[in-house]
Amino acid sequence: MPQSKLMPSILDREITAKADDTLGHQDFANALTSLIESEHHQPPYSIGLLGPWAPL
View 1: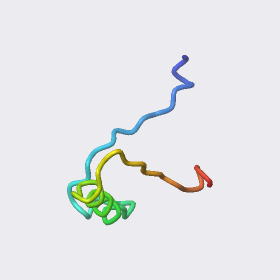
View 2: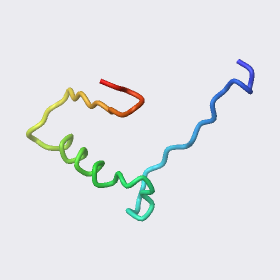
View 3: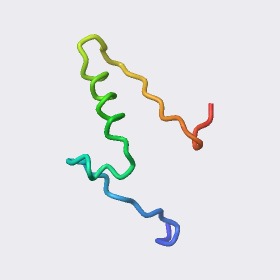
View 4: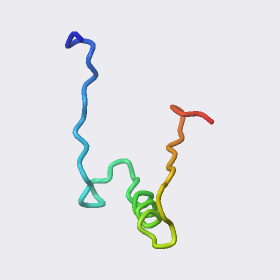
């Protein structure tokens, strides 16, 4: 594939400080972590990401 057709990628890194959470999703991420790590919920999990890119 020619270089001009490739999409640029962005390195995804863990946010280590709430001040670095520019999208404001840290509270949601913490809640999701709590659900996944809870002893009351066992895998497998189904997690949906809904938005304008994935309408119902």
